[in-house]
Amino acid sequence: GESVGLHLPTLSVQEGDNSIINCAYSNSASDYFIWYKQESGKGPQFIIDIRSNMDKRQGQRVTVLLNKTVKHLSLQIAATQPGDSAVYFCADSGGGADGLTFGKGTHLIIQP
Amino acid sequence: ETGVTQTPRHLVMGMTNKKSLKCEQHLGHNAMYWYKQSAKKPLELMFVYSLEERVENNSVPSRFSPECPNSSHLFLHLHTLQPEDSALYLCASSQGTGTSSYNEQFFGPGTRLTVL
Image (tube, rainbow over all chains, first blue to last red):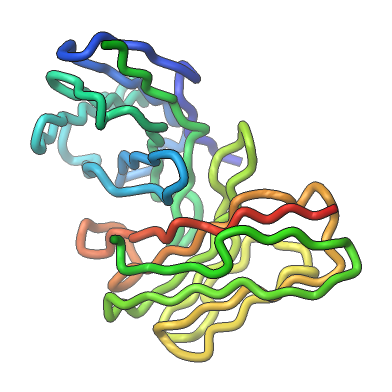
């Protein structure tokens, strides 16, 4: 079936630097994408979403970029903080009528 | 914290046991979900309920049996599980179904299940 995947399993960044987490998707019919953050011992938490009629959306310290031509999604975190340490998942709406299809996740590690 | 609670947080069971996972949402949502999260694998959608009716079942083995008695509670009944069923089981809820921020899914902390 269709899949959503992340490029790297682990990303290590210095505190204060910007982080970029990438995601590739294969379902050309996907029209809605979400980034989730999962901290240790907790369930995933919604960060930001974007529809396919947009190519950029900004939140507080986070920006999601969508390139439909190459089916690529990225999450940019500005001025990374220790509290940003978590596993980040991208997901799309192509997994069924009402559920989400998740990627495997990228573990973001913050170095002091 | 998220308004979605799950009990128990940890469960160890033998393959012949019968147990149930419980999820409760305090957000007034109409849709609830069960996901399975295994190590090194993406989250897998198992079941979706909308207004207490099952709307999606992603070919889950019959040893997993969901129950949604009302819009605030969701159960996952387990029987004769296999060791490969060991995983984190996550419950989520949303206002409705469909793709929009309005229907953002809120997740519980999960139940860590170990099948011996």
